[in-house]
Length: 115
Length: 111
Image (cartoon, rainbow over all chains, first blue to last red; front, side):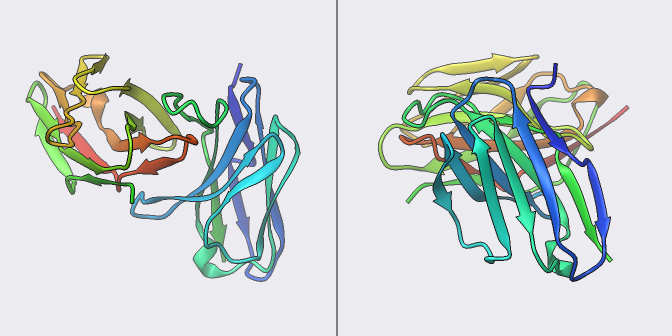
């Protein structure tokens, strides 16, 4: 009964390729997020969607494009992968914005390695 | 602006030692405060939270008190175990549910 699930768990690919990571949550949450964690464990917010609408879009290369087909899914597509994209990408979800005491729930991460 | 500052790691302790991981914050308004734990190869899990000043969050022997006067939310545990080895993140949430995470503190507990 995984609450936030991401696929794939591991992704190894060549520089220049295009890849997608999928995320689904079964918690009934309205808001979903993508984070990037580097090798030093630093966590950086990339995007946030509320009810399929983009609400946070940090300074991220436009090679990264999120897509939310419905409020339970938030996918991340990456074009023209570069060496610096190697990281762990985490999906998270939370209740409706405005409820500041609601925690975020995280998936187990997708470990992306660029060769 | 909003931000979270955590003590730098890594921290190495012997089993049964006392743990403190410092966390201070800067925020507009009245944030909620959280500690998350990340075990090797896993995602972040909520450890505890506090939503207003003087609240104490606690879970699995860990505690943290929301101190508005010192803008702090230090994590403590009286007796750590090997299984507590992980990376710990302090975070705050503001109106609009935007989260701000600290840089994480790696803890290793040796037998």
